[in-house]
Image 1 (cartoon, one colour):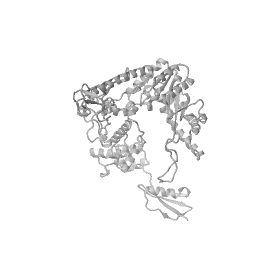
Image 2 (cartoon, one colour; image 1 turned 135 degrees about the vertical axis):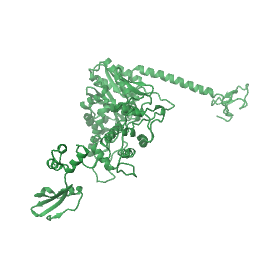
Image 3 (cartoon, one colour; image 1 turned 90 degrees about the vertical axis):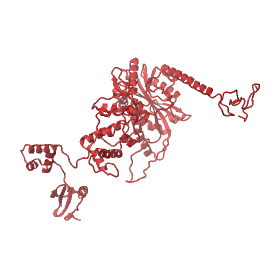
Image 4 (cartoon, helix red, strand yellow; image 1 turned 90 degrees about the horizontal axis):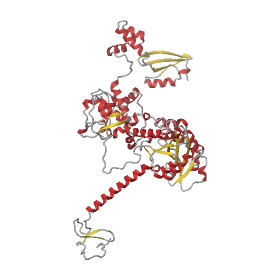
Length: 631
């Protein structure tokens, strides 16, 4: 049916654009603009003849002029060369736009309504959002909208936000994100509080200092082929991550059949700084190994078993012997994490016999300091899921078992153990070339929240590259440096009603003794509203013994001898405390339940003590005594 003078009704610009697509403008012969005013533009599209036409309302493109045209027009009017009418006609800039910019003095091209917060305030807010994300307490969109509303109320900023909900609008948030592309929505990864605390500059600097000494002693600076890193990877016989699939729009139940509690297989990988990987060690769960478990593995792989499918002390010794068959000639260094199965005196003896030196990384820092964790194993699960999905597609009636695991592992291993992945892992962790600066400053930011109050890092020892600690809080000097503000901001007291208390339900210490005068520090409005939170250090009565790898340490025999001595000293002190407690309570009678100093007799069966008078005994009664009520 031909279109004859059909007029599309009063639509919004969004609906008009949709109508333009529905009309298929490309198939028409001619387009004429009938009317154009403001944002509205009426177009007549002719097909074959004027009688067959359609009138389409569509939005008009705004601000086709550039910022240079605006600057030229405003300057010409200021100098009296042109009037506003002539300038608008010559430079194609609306006269009212020229007049408004003449009044404000701004020469920046802007469209739409003015934002509620000024440019400086939004830049300040962006810096605080980035800072909170660095320290491990990122701001959610809902919290940000609530925070902006509170800021406008406190600073008397005119706004049109919802008074009842007490939050900024969703439209404001969308416009804010569009104005600041450096901020994006991300899914946050969880970080253990112990990892946030241990990855600090003191621990990391000590780690690199010890590695530097080891590299010099073993002459490893020019021999990267003798620097090895090993780590275990638990691989579940199923898909590791949720997959993006296709389903009906709006469907609430979309399932992918896969085992939720699949069996795990441990893979012990080892690489050197030159980019070479040795064959892996595969540890299956079970008491015996079937012949098919040796098939279709990467060439040279070592297959072992354990009761739970995990690495043990004995298996780690076998791994060292496996490494000795493939390692380069000369004294080699093996870097690993502080798992309990890696730290034993017998392991050191085996490593010494194989010409291998051992170094244990600091605890809870492997996510930044271990090459395999940082680069290689990061891509392992991605390639693993792809291969498992391919297996499920080709074999829908088969289950992924330990025998079929080998085929998938062979394909995945060659994809993740590439030369580029291995060398980039050593480079980003600073192990080779040895570079303490490879760990970025943002990696240390979460540890600021766990620093002990009163221990302020004020200067840096250039010779040792380690911070010097002052025993008392240091009064800050007036400074506009961001680093200075953040250093003070993480230790000052927070007034009541701050962002940290509002969002996370608690605040920093309320002791007035530790307060630093805020008047001495130049802080912006959002820094006052969003100070970097300082968590309280909870003191426990029982202080836990520090692990052997509390700091990075070479694993040698003396390390375990020292640990034995410390255990003996702790055992003696514990026995002494028990003996003192027993001596204090030795006059307690189980008959009268009183603690008084009188002649006592112990039961020959259970050892309970009784006053002789309470149980009717005398000095002459020397026979074995038993509890009167029975033991």
